[in-house]
Length: 510
Ligand SMILES: *[C@@H]1O[C@H](CO)[C@@H](O)[C@H](O)[C@H]1NC(C)=O
Ligand SMILES: *[C@@H]1O[C@H](CO)[C@@H](O)[C@H](O)[C@H]1NC(C)=O
Image (cartoon, rainbow, N blue to C red; front, top):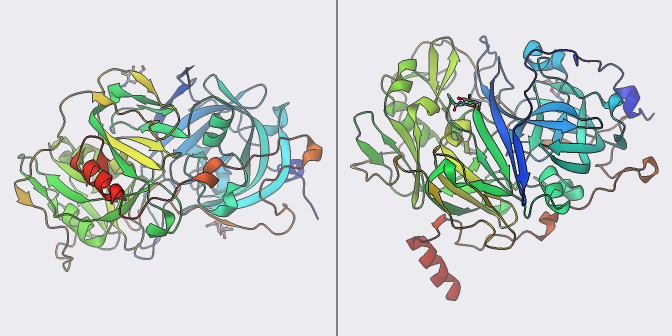
């Protein structure tokens, strides 16, 4: 009982006429293999939350989680489509079902892709179900033109939602294929390279601080006007070295600290905690001892046992403190303003929750970091984000594709010396228990756990192997088949000119 694409979509007549919230044209520039596109921060009414066992269920309030989105143009003629930019998953898909999105009016404020109006769209006959931290989508894979600014990707495979829950905007996944089953087609980053639009599978993501809606993603390039100092090179951990066993942007965090409003700085002893960078998650999740140490360090913080949130006065965001994350030689200081989250009118929480399985640095960290994601060489490069103009530098190909450039900006909290030890190792019994104001709020956006199940029944079962009789393109294998595993003992970050780099070289010689 095969149901074709068009039949499946019969009930999906959506609000294409809606003008409210329609995105402005993406600011994208293209030239010499660099493709820059603006990333907008969008306040959601309430997003898909990752519900974990330790969180109680049922969110009363419509929380303002921030989604980071990019505008694409899909089809012929091109239609504007807004999607969440997600470093925690790999597929591109559009058209969430707004009625079951958890926030129908917010969802329908974005134009949906009308597949019937595109003359270049081809059905592949393949379908799948993708599950995120919270929310899932049943989609059918099609191919069509996908444009990022003036760069046009031909025959890009992507999903069109047929049934979806708890996700208000489609998703552009930029992670490596998270399982072997996924390597069967060319994701957007792969296609940008295979179609000659950029040189290697690398991009920079600059989300900006919470008051700045003007972040950007640069495919194949770096903007030295957007960070301070050197870029610290952190090897992406081999899947076997990670808690999830999945190939995502996992790196090793070597310390945490805080800088108090009065300037006192504390840094933990050396630790080695694998963390995964997820632009699709509003919050960060860290091992319990670190979560408690950070939460307790906030002025006036009150722990709400039922939700796990540390509540703080929203005025804390105006104070000068920071939460500091250390990656070997590099300290990324996240100002209080970027690390707290206003969950409801006048109610703020510290942007971290505990996890005992998969530590994540979400948007509450990424707002303060400039990160270059180099999939081909399996490294992330991190620096303290700033904004002092714009100077685009191309990422070429080969092992030194990401150039050893230094940010043009000055200032920031780089390498302030700690005066005290930050004890982030001891878990203690919670003492300060606040009132239970918000139950179960977690974070917004697609979670790290994009998983797949086979679709049985009428929608077709295969992964997107395109039915050639429809004239669609045959998706090519992802180049990731050739990825290198990180050598043992080289999982720590290293400044290009730093001591760790020397140790690494010595270790290689021996
Ligand atoms: C998708 O999410 C809905 C709502 O939470 C749930 O009822 C359904 O079982 C999920 N489907 C899959 C395939 O996980
Ligand atoms: C964001 O960009 C717009 C348009 O260029 C500009 O008017 C606005 O000032 C920018 N916002 C910030 C916070 O820089």
